[in-house]
Length: 84
Image (cartoon, rainbow, N blue to C red):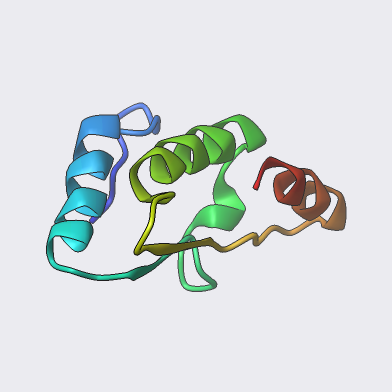
């Protein structure tokens, strides 16, 4: 599932459907942007947008959402940690 539009912005409706299908499938631990993902390639603004949408769907009782904070730069990792 690649939730990106042709201009490489987040396809929010596709992303929401994908995350919601995991929740509807009774998954409790949902991990986003792990080491096999493409989180390292996102700008901080796109990372923040993805995290905000994901948190809006998953930060609730009974779910254990997690965000992978991966980057090629320690400074960017620290900035992303501040967002989470």
